[in-house]
Length: 451
Image 1 (cartoon, helix red, strand yellow):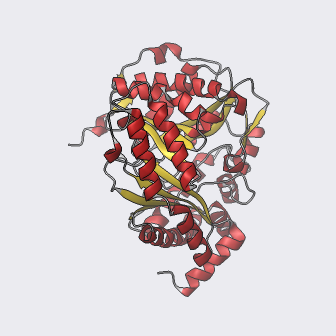
Image 2 (tube, rainbow, N blue to C red):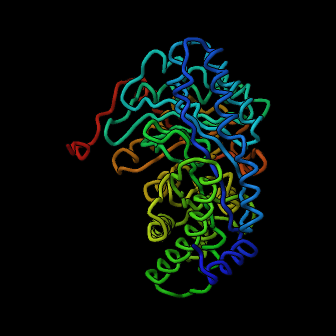
């Protein structure tokens, strides 16, 4: 339990430093809902989600009032949907619409898990499922999608990488009336994890229990505030302050997670202590890096500062809880971080620098807007690059990129809310279409042979 000193510190973090529980996410297994027809499966999935998650919003509200910690999002994640639709190829969108209705019925902000895991191979039903994603995201509001195309154990499925470049382009076109907004709900992974509470990549893994609560805490503002007290200190002292701050954040998150699990009659899964920014001033990962000593995020020294931040966050979290999981690190989404937005506007952050930063932090090229005429093969090249970083380094990497129809470099796009706004960033003028067209499977690295 939190002691008196920790409670006072938590109150200060909430009132002055933008600390919050970013999400309570209920993972629900939908395997028992599989039937031969789309209509039967969709109905059973809808009913099961509505039954299991009917109290999640109410319980989150109760916990907010009792503990005084804001809970920003309530979400649901489900079994990767490609497993549910294998017997009705071509009618996957029937399920998508039912999932979106269920999300609205129970009142959650997003539902994740319209997903496929194709890191080693892709069956005909999985290909059909992936091809349904553009329509599914166009006709739904709260449903999110993800596809895992690689892993350190399996290598990279380059056929899936090629297909996902095309899918992202199609999704942007299907939602062009909203500046390609569908792409903001679609992420391509390497080494996707089964217990991620954050969207758009959350899904309920097959090794998880029947119903599980995973909580994502976030406190960029808390870390930023703490670092103001150690101006001029050595790097190891800075790391120690970050570690202690992450410890406090995680302790508060675990308290909420355990209590939510008890009240929702679900297993307690993990606490994900990722520093997830918002477009609000004072809630920026970029500003943490600048507080450490950078003139502007994206300049030389950025990758080193981010490596230290990410490592210290993980160490502090592991000290505080035996159930740290998900992604747990520092997120660098461009449109969702006011500091990253400003850095991109003045050219300090480029796609190449984001790729380098991916090597030492969570996820990767995230919420990046690019010109609408960016080719599918170029987007596939971004996915291949990020997947290679994840595969070689045994870490989760991802691409969530939005080719904004009709817009180019120098313009910007506004998504609103937590998704923020983003300047359109330049991509390399040099293509990779011949490489992407080769297809096949990139072999796993030698260190994958551990058995």
